[in-house]
Length: 266
Image (cartoon, rainbow, N blue to C red):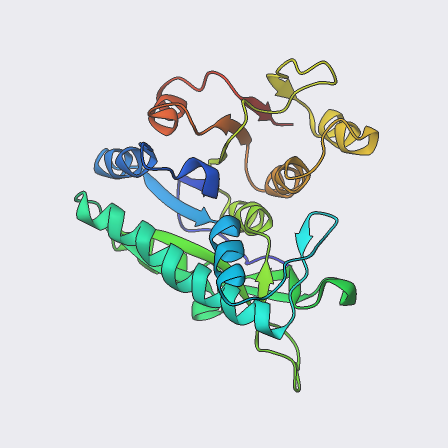
């Protein structure tokens, strides 16, 4: 279930991968430049590598099942602290210090994202059941870039279960794009885009072709949640893009030229 309606006009949803936020990265500069051009942006970020580093510091082992981090209570505490705290505030600080206007929120704030437990085997990992776009509308209409950390409110009656769930950032980006009827969803990744079995870039895919790549195993690992998120987004978004965020000013070039990477659209 997604939020109803959309009063936002043309919004671009950008998913930042941790690998694309290195010391030489120009993405923050690009976000500020696009905002100053009058573009409405929503940024969703992950932070898997930082979470793993912090779990190691605390001596908490990391285990993945089907590419998703198994999240027990000890892991969840670190996930919330790192995503909604450290990583989120570093991105917000970087945008504001370059003259942009950004506010950091998590999926918990204003009940933006509500989730339910996806699979008992994965622990406190959620799947999105509802998006409430109202907090994004308020921030966008006030001239801010919302920077969203991918944790959600635990919908229903958790009882003794935690009130917050860890949610895949790709899925959050796709659900938000669908809910607000975004003009475009852009994934900044550390690969050139979606490739075929021989490693050749596939510049354009239909939803059926994208699903077939998952079914055949050609698309694997971290590309699967990105493709699935694009397919979800297409219920409200006309164009979804998976591009190489390692290139200088990749985001700015994407908005101006839209070349390179992979487009998934109906």
